[in-house]
Length: 125
Image (cartoon, rainbow, N blue to C red; front, top):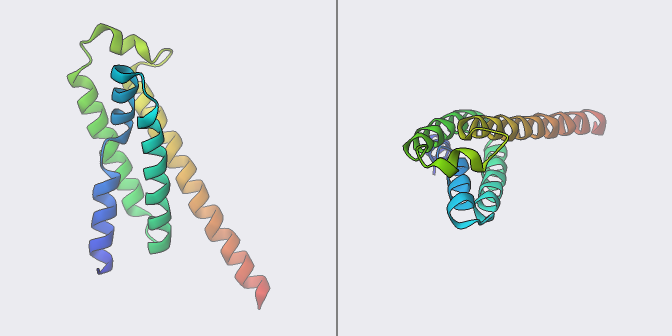
């Protein structure tokens, strides 16, 4: 596969509304499995992004995923317990908060690893 195809696939998978899926499974089935799936998939996607040396799919996919999560969230926002289940956050606020936290963690690790590798290579020679 060429780099453009890999970048496109990474962006498409990152764009899946994982946060909404996790919230949905948590609310309707009282299951934390959605949060676990989200964490594992984000970790795998991060590793693939890092190995491909591309950061754009991570950023674009996160924003698309957040947009889709908020859109899907609005479709079931009329369920009374849904809006109070994730207190102290409102559901849209929680989606945005989780996205920002995930994105900051991934970007921080990405640049930290890059910096460590750069320092390691410069002291090696």
